[in-house]
Image (cartoon, rainbow, N blue to C red; front, side):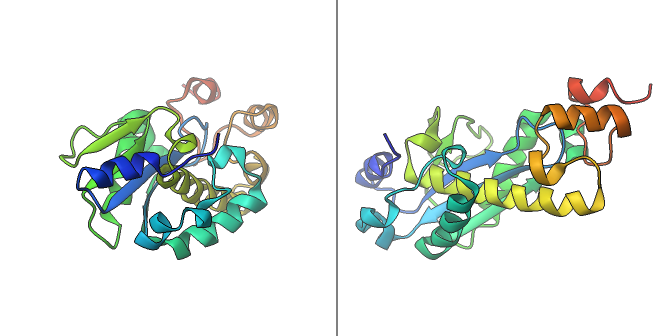
Length: 208
């Protein structure tokens, strides 16, 4: 079943009207940043659910569909914010705090105020805003699905750019995930500056 506006409607019924969906991309990768996005769908989008038919968890969409939805979301949203936390900071903070930092940055870069959050899986305990945390929220809430698409497309584009700087790792193909090709590249080339050296699969290739 595709995501809906059910959770958004429940929050609006409780008096919250400016709702931000939050999700991240790249949390489990061996290389590259963790990227989070915050999306505030417009009142027009909420009032016209047909505009959101076909939106889904970014992992369920093809790359072409994600790109098309990325453009559509920018037109349907009152605000889109993105937070990017690089590998070196992930190593320093740990992946969960780094993910929370990326989400917080995404919220801070929104061009509009929000009064409640819909978040995929990971609560933000340092924020006082009301939060609805949903496991697999990107498959339940249109706002979170929209954020998942923005985060995924943004991160994929960053990794495609990185492929030109750090040739030989295949970043444009696997985007930093732990594929067999990525592991082979690590064996042959060792880690580069984009690698998360605190992650065990990468740490084994780091010099002592």
